[in-house]
Length: 193
View (cartoon, rainbow, N blue to C red):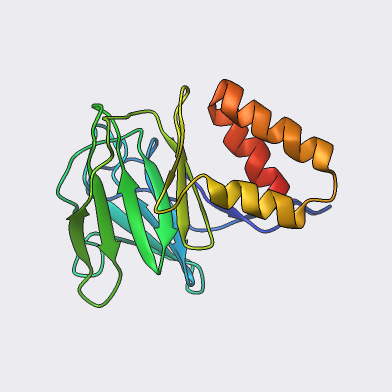
């Protein structure tokens, strides 16, 4: 359960502790939530906070404060946890989740933030991992690697144009195609970031 957020690079002096995450609506932290970084705010939606929820919390990095609920952080429509989160075009996305769901919700930040249900996944998925890169959202489960909002070719194109070691590129593509596991996302993200 996330109770504190640590920011900054680990240096000799260590990490800097910032405002703890304790949702006053539930008296708890959160795990299995969707999260996105948009501008200078971290959006944390849904997740397990004593029970699966549809709650939204926003951390303001500049002010060092959390907002839990209210006009800028309204509840979503679907209760769930163990979902993927991502950012595309300045919006926060909540994807799939437990219980196994096809649902994808889009949150538009603003003075009166709004949730919209958008095109669903083609199959119900829970226990997801997610990452965002250049306004594209990638989600992975133990058995599948899916790119939302684009084609698999984006990986091939980027690797072909930006990686020097083509042996590594070939091995990574083989690994992704062969295992389709969550660890391939971690390897891929480490390679491209």
